[in-house]
Structures are given as C-alpha cells and as structure tokens.
Image 1 (spheres, rainbow, N blue to C red):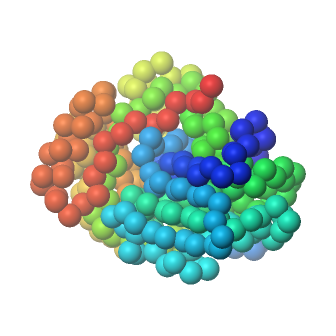
Image 2: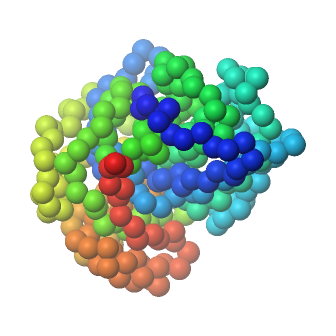
Length: 305
C-alpha cells in the first residue's frame, strides 16, 4: 500500500478536488481461485488521464450530489461506493471525521471494466485523509480498501503515484512498475454494462499461465508486441454475454490501433496509437460513426515525481 502521508493537509475551510482515473487492464491473466471463491489474478495495469471528478468540502451536515453524463445511473444512498468509503474511514476515526459535502461528476460508464466505482472510492479516501488530517496505519488502510473492493488498492496506488503496476492475488498485492512508455489511447464503450460475477461464472478455465516476464519497453511498438503475447482471460466469457466485443476490437484496429484489448470484465475496450493526435483523429471518426458510444482519446498517466 502506498505511503499516503506525504500529501499535504488541507486547510480546514478548503474544498479539495481530484480526478478518479480510469483503470486499464493492459493484460489480465486469471491464474486460479481461492477456497473462498475469489479469483487470483496477474494483471498489468495502467491509468488513463481521464476519469470521474470528485470534490469534497467541509459542511454543516453530510451531503452527496451527482452530475455528469453517467450520474443518473448511480444510487445516491449508502449503496454508492463513495459513501461506503466515507463511512468505512469514519468508522475508524469518529473524532476527526467532520461532516462533508461530496460531489461526484460521473464521466465514466458504469459497470464497464475500468474501475470507475473503485477509483471513486480510492480517490475519496485519499481526499478525506487530507481533509480530516488523519494517519491510518498502512495495515488498516489496506483493510479498508479490500473491504470496499479488490480493485480499490490498485486504484489508490494509481491516484497517488500514477504510472503502471502489477497486481497479483485478488488485487491486493500491488507492485509499482517502471519502464512503460506513456501510451496514447482511445477508450470505447457501446453502452453495455457487464456484471463481473456473471463473467467469472462463465469462465471454463481458471488456472491459466501468469504474465510473461516484463522488460523495459523503449517504444510503443515494443510494448504492443509484448501485449500481443498476453491475454485478457475475461474476454472469452464476456464475448459470450456481449457478442459484439470482438467486432469492437476489430473496429479499433481498423482505425489504426496497433493493439486493442478489452479492459477488466468489459465492456470498455481500448486501442493503443502512435501519437495522441492519431488517437484523437480515430476517436473523432469512431464518435461520428457511433454517436451513442462513450469514446475518449487520452494517454496513460506517467509516474508521478
């Protein structure tokens, strides 16, 4: 778990804002399943420079508001992962946890394989730790993250450090990774929401090989050649539920992507391009041809200094 305590404490009257970055599984290998039913993963993760926006500020009483393209698809009650994150941290620090107003601008599709809810929760934890000026022990912070979801530890890592990482176990074993170039990307989602538990139920093989050994990649081409030796083991079961996914991947390739893959359990797919202008041009074409799709040209985040 990253060291969150180097972040500056916020002045008591200040509002804080941060982007909850989209999580991208550049490769996702399912290597087994624990006795409790959780699946074991070996996944190469990067974060896109685009996501939801979270703003918090001190208030007389708690409040939670939503906006954004996908805001109406989320609950505003305790079922929302943002509020679960607030309450989980408050449970351990009742004296410091003053009332807050939270606003979530939901720009990412819901249930789309890019960790939107997990990233929202992780980002809120990072902001609250600053606002409330608290220092949870690393073990406790990891416990809170896993309580919220297996993707939350890696999303907190991305919020603090950017860059890329390898996550193993059920997602709790996070290792920073250097040597990956910043990648120009196009993200697309055709509006299909896929349930992750449903995907795992459709898996036929769970003891797959782990990721190949990683090296330093000096170019997009080298990284794309490596990614072509990897898999997303959730793509075959996802394609059973959403048969259009292979076609979407081919559309990205036809628009110039050197490599295309589905992220997480889907249905968001990404394509890697030579340059950001090339990605932006491809995104414009895709959006014109598919006006109801979510389409976004961006880059992966570099490592934060």
